Image (cartoon, rainbow over all chains, first blue to last red; front, top):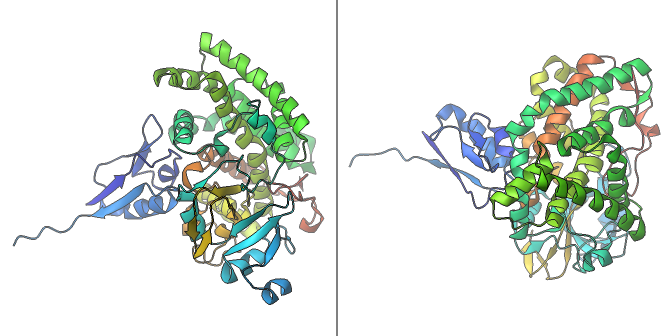
Length: 71
Length: 412
């Protein structure tokens, strides 16, 4: 499972992420980036990485969930 | 080249824009040299003799354009002004700043008033009408028969018609918009600019007043309503400035960008064949054409409001910085084999032809959609489309803020 963080204070609503990652990102009514699904699956990794690169204000980041290990 | 390699001291100041020798579709050759030998270099603007720093590396531009110490204050004496902007009229309050010359937090407040109109969803809803306009213009081209100048037939009218429909102003106002924007970015005198500016302001203020009374289904009405919803902080002059931002961005740069992209497309028949075969590659093709041609090469400039270091170079408070977006979009650190056009290029979406940072083109989604429709429709409807003159005989604009052509004759 992948977790994507969107920094709303930074997002300038340019829409670049929606063009690069249409299955991951959408825009709210203000134009700012929102997620289509809360926790995108592994198959969307490429779209996420491309959107992160395409974002002109570095508002997006990908957090890898650490595999839970019982100790 | 010789001059560059022999005189490589930090104090070398080169005349800017750099000479564009060789293929007019390729970047000025010195960009590639500077990028490797002196990525942050000194230049002197031929326009007004002001000196500035020139950035030629993608990464340095990313860093600078996100750094709040660099601002877009066009009135600062260190700002690398490259066209006859009427600063005295700005000081007198006769001309207002557009988004291009605002900085946060004011820039953010004004920009975010406009951005809800430019979402991917809203732009997608404009696609069918865009297709109709493009089809009508191509019908007229076909009826006329080749050769035709594709600028007057297609790449100039399309963005204008789309803009007049978006703003719901009569099509004949397009001339006024053009007069205003060309007086600003080309050789207009401050007086000519002031006259055109006043005409545009009168028109826009009238529309804003009318639509404040009676909002309709157009972009100006949407701005008025959104401003009211958000507390009404913006006055009619601010809303007018937002609309002028759109008009400024939506004419000259869109037209030149589309025209140069058509030229590049027709000069690469093997890539054109790929797109004709697979129209679903249109988005990627547009990214790559934008990257390759980067018509707004050196319009992205800032001035340092504090000392700051970029690419290992100290930039002092009050010094100007110019980004060569063309140089960034041909930086081999990001784009392998950068001078080759490749519609399958994975990293094409990372191009910064639309700018970088919080000033990223507000209309990029719209322009991209328009370009997708133009290129795929041209290739589908006129399979034999080709240049009517060799590239070396084409009239390229010289000393323009935005690269382009005066005329692009095509035939089929």
